[in-house]
Length: 185
Ligand SMILES: [Zn+2]
Image (spheres, rainbow, N blue to C red):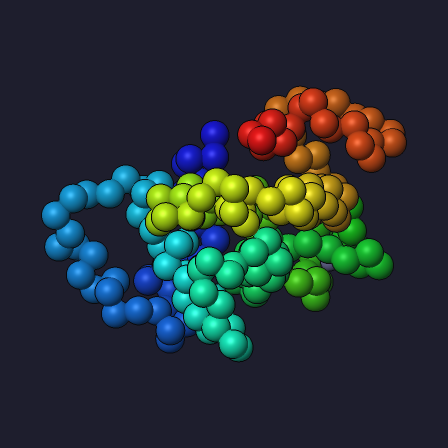
């Protein structure tokens, strides 16, 4: 389910807004092995994360990387988000289809972040990290994703589970059994 997120969180080479994109993208076509969409997305995410760590002051070496860097990274990615998340106080708060424009910020949709974390979690271990130290597997990440999911569901007035039409009047903690990413650990 999380393997085929088409979008990806980070703007690809086509939207060349970030000038820091490495020049390795130009040789993409000549790679001998053709990577699947998931694999190439994972590789791109991993490179972006590595670049993010190197850009910290002071730079963070991978062995020093912990879950708080991952949380900061996800917040950093919000600036590339395309999902309008209404703030409380906006007249469109809670409306799935806003009737007009507003100044609320664009964010990363929680589903994109969830998929991203899954890819990076795998990439971390493929690049020599151990499962025990994997910062992407940290419980704090799951808590953060859950908070983002719930906040976005409220702000946009849509249930995060689109299939089931099940309304719960007070659904603070009621999603434990129905959440799939929850059960991965
Ligand atoms: Zn708004």
